[in-house]
Image (cartoon, rainbow over all chains, first blue to last red; front, side, top):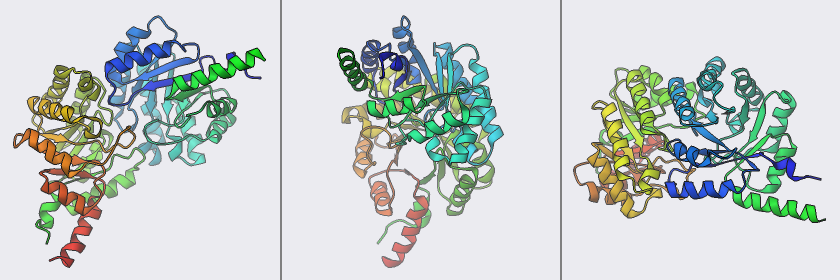
Length: 232
Length: 233
């Protein structure tokens, strides 16, 4: 039987639509704080990150800084500047997009150096660097190569796909990474996880975390589910 | 009868490829094609600017680089860093920056203006287009965003990123262009982008007053022009 422990700090969420005014971000954070036991991190539009850091400073939720998000096609120098800025302003996790174009062109060394540079720029100042390899665009072999590169570059997490591109992560991708890499890298299952059922499936398949965009609905379902479990 | 020559038509078009999965081979082909068709520009992400500069050397096809794309929500100083990098690593370029829409939606108009001004300044005379993301704005906000872009010294208002992942996204229409034109008059140009796929859409948008069209279907549009101009001479 699944208990509450199974879900603690297992979720990331985000408010990164390009049209959210500050008041909406503040309201979102206040709501999130009610569920801090489930939430590991929240990603924000970079310019709203300082506001978020201020509001979340007395919680154990990591503020996530997004780098080259959601397309990845920025030069390394620019990515490094974004990451440094995020950390300077209080980010405790970096979610960066891999340079997919270079990867698809077979330039694996360049991709690894790109990630290494961001990892080096934030080294010791964040709890995690997660890299988004856009698994939905990759063949099975490429998926393994990408995660290998991400791991070798020193990132601590692989985040399956960016949201906003309409991609969906199948549970098989989580299983594949877990099977090939054991516990040597953490997995954030992201993009298209809209229901609690799907989230549980991902966690059981070996995901360390689930990134969701509709957290309150999911957490309230989860509380109901756990509440029912307790009374029985 | 089509009242525009092919030479005129191609100079309205910024042929666009912002796909994250585009390979170097695909980008080379895309850039060679843009050169062959002699489009006004190619719209690309910063990472591809050096390759574009190499391939388009000697042509007058402009290298139109997307800044703060597609969210527009990186802080001003990082937009400036992106622009500086692009200017150092690219020739014959233009800047298509995304406005900070949350700031606009929060009523922080001075900050929106400063964000654009900083990019205009960093661009050192290179034309700057401000993407205001029309599908996400009310009519009043479109007016405000256009006027702020003008005040901040940008050359163009650009309708949309064309990025379909945002809630409420829709294609840009001739009506959008006409509306923005009615606000900025002759003081600014309008670039229409987002969901423009056909020749008839392009012609309608040009007639509405757009000076530039951003589309990933530029080649198709010109090929259709060639076919149709034979049928309707």
